Amino acid sequence: MAALGAWGSAAVPARLSRVARALWGWHARRGLGQDAGAADGGKAAKPAFADEAVQKLLYKMTGLNLQKVFRPVKKELKPPKYKLMTEAQLEEATRKAIEEAKEKLIMPPVLNEREPIDDVLAEDKFLEGTETTKYVFTDLTYSTPHRERFIVVREPNGVLRKATWEERDRMIQIFFPKEGRRVIPPVVFKDEHLVTVFQQDRHEDILNMCIAQFEPDSPDYIRVHHRTYDDIEKHAKYDLLRSTRHFGGMVWYLVNRKKTDGLLIDMIHRDLLDDTTSLITLYHMLHPECQSAKEAKEGKLQGVDLIKVFVKTESQKEGYIQLALQAYEEAMATSTAS
Amino acid sequence: MVQLGSRLLKGYRGGHVVIRFALGGCTNRPFFRIVAAHSRRARDGKYLEQLGCLDPLPNTHGERVAGLNLERLRHWLGCGAQLSRPAEKLLGRPG
Image (cartoon, rainbow over all chains, first blue to last red; front, side, top):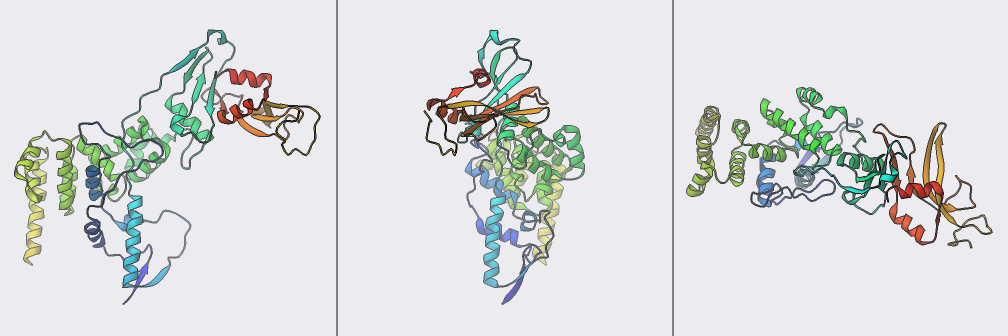
């Protein structure tokens, strides 16, 4: 049977996201690093961000809304192209689309803040007073990775020291410019301006800009991300990030600080039971000493029971979650009855 | 001795390779390129290789930015290039 498939304007059924999730199942996914640097977020005892199991859970929760992932980026206007395909070709095309979408959903790494560099290489008192300004020397050898480049500063008082991280980033951007990065970080990343961005609901755009501009372990990157996640959690706008690559990072942040209640309620409202269970599993992986983790391990609970145990022991907004669960169960009952 | 048999169209008598500054930029805005060239060439003329740059005016953070391609510098110094006075001073600063 021939079926019309337009690329960009939808004949893809919304059911596809659930089907796709079932299809790829336990496909292993590792969050790859952005630029240089190992994606090793973790302390040895607790599970780290880059662990297989953690990544699987986070990826399952991110969801795969093809519409949103391939939402057209603003380019020049072209009329949509229509192709005439058979059923088999349509499936092939959707499969390829899923592959590409998985590429786009690779999560940026979550790392600890980097230590400030404070290393003096030489102190030459006889150079004091010969110049009035600092000299910054950068090693331009093409084959050294940016992390290992020598960037040193000779101060007017004769001290030769290694450059700070901000100076390093600036110099590397001047000599080896990367697309999407400015030499001086844009003013929009200051706190007072972030508020304006959040009011316009453009969390995803600002996070993309932040990834392009800063290194994943710089304090600015971490600060911007934390502010964004806090704002989303305060206004319960979880759906803005749902099918993007930032969702995993947000969930990681919330679970580490035990602020998962709003997210739970949101998931239950949208009937995403699998996501709720994976969220609670992740919580137990990260906080194995809490009450609900022990009970879950003893009883080997699944599904709705797990949620109920979790809600009783861990959450602050118990009432809301109970209400949401009741509503969901009633909806399930009516749908199975009819 | 003309070094390296480089394919210069100008034949020289004598002369050697130097690492020196070539001046570029606009009026009241100098910009130096650190360059390995034949000593008999014009200051801003054809050079063998560019090894870096120096901006003598301080930027908004009060720094004078300089870049040096250390690997190629070592190569040329190994081939026996000489340094001009200002180039010596610049390379002496980072040690």
